[in-house]
Length: 225
Image (cartoon, rainbow, N blue to C red; front, side, top):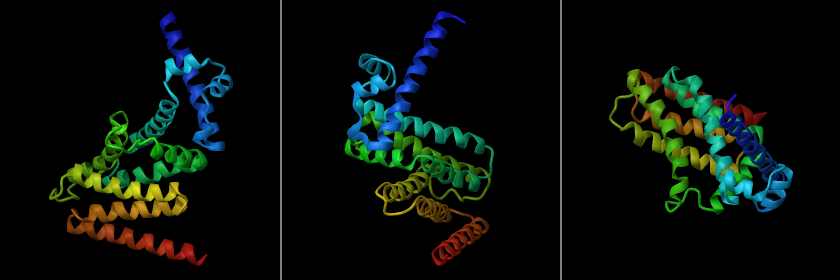
């Protein structure tokens, strides 16, 4: 193995160690508890190494958020050739599965992201979060067009943007503990179905209505249990 390859692998290992420890701290005690000197000690690196490999405290948070987005994108690769409805559902199901693995961390990280303005128009360095998330939904819409399930009266990017807006509302409610992860998934799926129905062919519209009704029955049964 070339020296450059070894250096690259070692850099990635140190970066992973830093992010892994940062995720643990944020999950346990929140973003405010993250201290770069303590983080460096826990990850067996120096503070300058953190700055060289990642950057500031805000950059560490950004890197953790990016890692979550990449994980979701990787999960969705398995659905690239799946039917459009499966692709749309996977955006919600795969992401909420990832969030459910470490709810404390993801809630704390997203609250911190709100505080530092990750979704602000002024934060151009973070604008890709919304863009890539919107494209996950838009890709399902494009698949629906190819399959003849959508009429094409509404642009796929516009439809995907509306789907993501509904998703973000559900995400925000979950982050602030107004709803459970199960309710987050339910609300986001329902919103996706409604958005798709706005441009659906009659046959696909009927299928989406059935899915919405099934969600309603599931919700009623869960409340009765």
